[in-house]
Length: 179
Image (cartoon, rainbow, N blue to C red):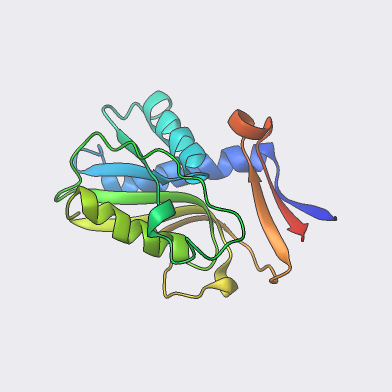
């Protein structure tokens, strides 16, 4: 199985800081904004961004949650093995807030569609935006586009974008892997 490095550790760090700055430009002090990482992989990106915003840009009181979309997916019962649910942690109100969904890779758009459905259980947001580290722009099945993107990648269907986080896999890197 061959792989190509799309982003190394230094490039991931630079990209995260750029995304954090873009969020600050649009959300100022985050008093009306909440960040929600889409489980399972978006939580690592969301946690890292919240840490950068808090520690390096002194943004106070960032509301950060994690949203499990397992039971809202349209392919929930289609796979050979059952999907494992993750934990949803949203201990704040999303009603009339600006919600920023955060996920590592935007591929077909189906996960985001599921997140849009799932968030309705927590109230009606004023606005919803999407931040993604990697945008596989030519693979969309649904008309969903990110408001914030780290990098666009043109990958064919037999390739997979693999994002690794130091907290989970011991390194920060993004690879393009042949399936």
